Amino acid sequence: MKHSIAAKRMRDIQPFHVMALLAEARQREAAGQDIIHMEVGEPDFPTPAPIVEAGIRALQSGQTKYTAARGLPQLREAIAAYYASRFGVNISPERILITPGASGALQLVLGALLNPGDEVLMTDPGYPCNRHFVRLFEGKATAIPVDATTDYQLSRAHVQEHWNTATKAVLLATPANPTGTVLTLPQLADIHAAIQQRGGELIVDEIYQGLTYGIPDTTSLSVDPDNLWVINSFSKYFGMTGWRLGWVVAPEWAVETLDRLAQNIFLAASTPAQYAALAAFTPEALAIMEAQRQELQQRRDFLLPALRELGFAVRTEPQGAFYLYAGSERFGEDAQRLCRDMLDQTGVVFTPGIDFGSYQANTHVRFAYTTGVARLEQAVERLAHCLPR
Image (cartoon, rainbow, N blue to C red; front, side, top):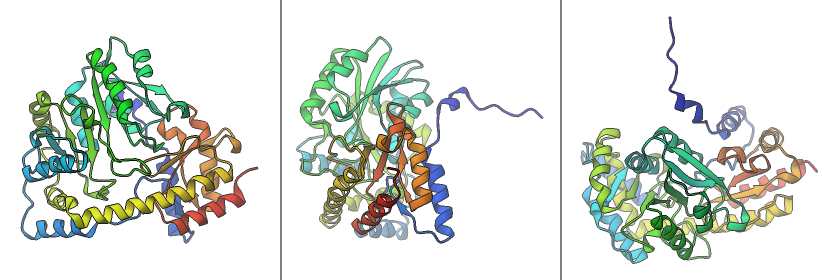
């Protein structure tokens, strides 16, 4: 019997290397070992109670039918009101589409924009699924090496240097995964101007919006509310990871295209999740999220100097998200082995740099401060006794 052969694109879509570490860590936990998780981008906070309660009420009242592909009108209106009240940016609810997570939003945007062979510029290191989504739509992800000299972000100079006739768009993330760094509004305006001059599109991943420390919270829509694409999510700041709910703010000309594509790709986002998310913008829920943001800042403020003291090179202070991207060259040239060894010897799990690209990946790791300070202290103490010298 002849077996089917997977599509060629699947050769370029790699798994998360950390998932093998996570699987082993869970096996060890099941066997009784105490594991400290610093590998997965999911804080230990539960979804805020007002959101959970709204979801339960939605289920009990029978809100389980499909919504329109664009999502609940009242949720789109609530998101538009949030942009107006928090950022002073006026966005028509008609330009907002609700999606199954930010991943659903990115699929819509790239599906609407890319022809085969079109290039999208992005950072290396960066969130790996971004390049894989580009490949899924037969585009080419051009990963540009970045380091601490530009806070691991792209600049106008990068766009000018790497833009070519095949380039269609630039994909940025602020705050960024895995580095936690942030682009200022002037920097975004500079990049946006360079892209506009070349007739391209700017896509900004803002899924960690709200999780910033020591700086104001912003949106790239303040730079240009009409002519760029913003992807966001209820997963991170709003604490709704497993609910799988996100949104995209699109230029007006693209709304019908995205609506048509959404109808075909996923029909609509989860109805109970959308009703639950209506409560995310209540004062009660926002107060909980602000308290969680403050706790994450306390975790960062402990872990950043502690990792440096251990010998990790954290070359720029992250101002957002909940990650520290650290040089591990002091401990050898094989970050994957370092992660495996530390899991084996200490029960502390963190992520090798290879999951985020290829540039200096063998000498970098990512720590997620998604567990409490007491557990972070334990992790640092364990690592201090076992890191190679």
